[in-house]
Image 1 (cartoon, rainbow, N blue to C red):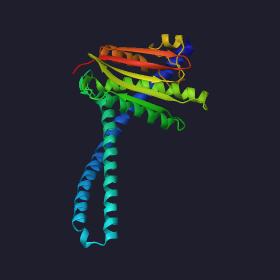
Image 2 (image 1 turned 120 degrees about the vertical axis):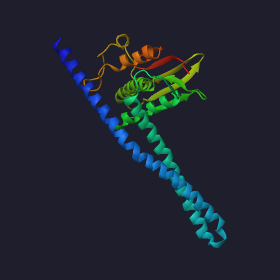
Image 3 (image 1 turned 180 degrees about the horizontal axis):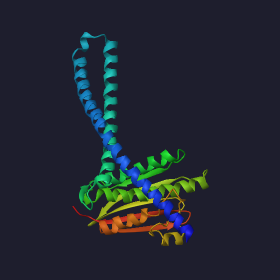
Image 4 (image 1 turned 30 degrees about the vertical axis):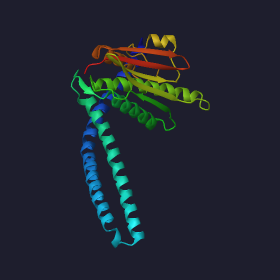
Length: 273
């Protein structure tokens, strides 16, 4: 009993630390958003100026030496390509920051029409980069299958993104554990899919990691139950995930797992437009 109390205290400390980090990340995201907006806006202005410059070069081609004219056009083309990349990745960074702010500031229980495919993709890759930042040797092949033309669906985005993140984090952890056990022959893979059928849509997240024993699977949603070492897991993530899917979205969460082969989590959620 004393050992369990001590473990509970350690996990609560970890949870408190995570809450503090959440507040800190929201503050950083807010501060970074403004300079990023300036980067994107000035890049778009520079793209327009380069387009004007390209037209001037083209109009005055006869007045320039052929070699100089070609070199100048090459420089303009390279600059335009660079500006496009700055805008593309700047807007991706803004999208990530808005997601972080949405999680930290979203109104409790508010349904918002959302691009489910974009949400799942964003948080899958956020989890991947987070895992890579902690374990430089970690790598995985991610297979993505997103239904084209899926309309905006009303969900609680800050909650659904948290559910996706929880499951993908666990999948990457299971993959990492297996890759350390059999580093030479193992090919780590994660498969993520989003599809609709009738009046519901599904999010499926499948890994080929260590899988679960029947005993672990039976206790999967118990609060404070975790197979991770103290400091790496609180045992709250999947309980929260089930609450998000089943209580807040009226859906179902199911899991299939075979020890040594991997696990598949599936969210089935009614469509609200």
